[in-house]
Image (cartoon, rainbow, N blue to C red; front, top):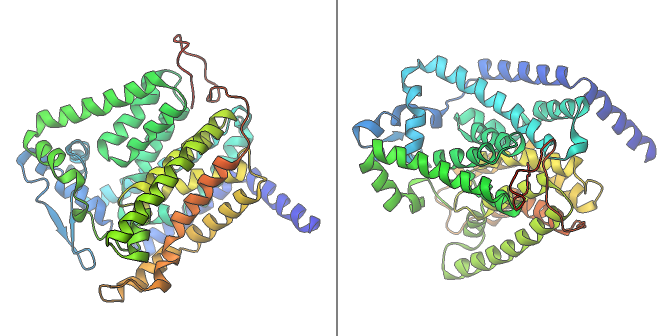
Length: 420
């Protein structure tokens, strides 16, 4: 066993030493795959075609007609997102697809670099950058990342904005603005604000709220009718997004709907599990903050957000990459629970369990009740997230001290802690 372990470590060291080449090969294979097997980035088409309606009206009446089980793809983001996407409508479609692919892959590299940076002061230097590039090369083939690229989704870009804001700027405006801007485009990144609160970055949290509010106000001024319509009714209408019960939805609500249906009993179970999960998050945040673990805090917050969201499509789970980085290199990397969670993430995201289940689901009529042979494996991302959250929570805490980001300095306001 020791010989096998030494050989595995040797392979890992060799790959890390040649991380740049590994990333180049991964990118080359990706380009070949895109050219030889082009996909239809339907979400990018929705962004492009719906955006002009924010000026003329009817933004939320637009829908791209596709095939079952989701025959209509409406625009589901806040009006500010449509303003951000307006330039896309001016580009030729082939140029837009190429540009979006390039930006998304670059964002993946930013996500890996910033996640490694948040590991702490010891994660700096050339070795850390090589490690991040190696993770970016591997992350390009994780199912949530592939799905994001295939659909032309905005997840990687928003994830990069959030992570860059939390890991790089030293001043509160820069750290908070990333979260606020991403949340103004798509609501789910707003959960990053919990990271700022957990790490006592009060001014950064205030900047996040101010940035999101300013962006929303700008959109309201440009498109008051669409803004009023969205924020008064559509923001809570999950029916427009798609079938909650589908295995495409990897949130806890989706898992419970597949396992138990959507009756009163399932609702009670769901709320009970959410209550327990909230307690687990509180324990995880306290444990990670006390042991000076910024990436652990962020991973716990983001996975919690994916679990409690009514709808978390599989392409939303790009946060599996920072989670895997933390499990592999974080302060609790030698714990058995962390190793089990890392192995399960690898199996679920590399073997592409969810797309296989989606294919099986689509060959069925509307499942009622949902087949248990599909329902239980369909909880795989939720299970990975719960195990990771438990790994963060059950790790030993250190002294009760503030979390600080690498290469950062305290702000003038001593009541606020500087963190990633």
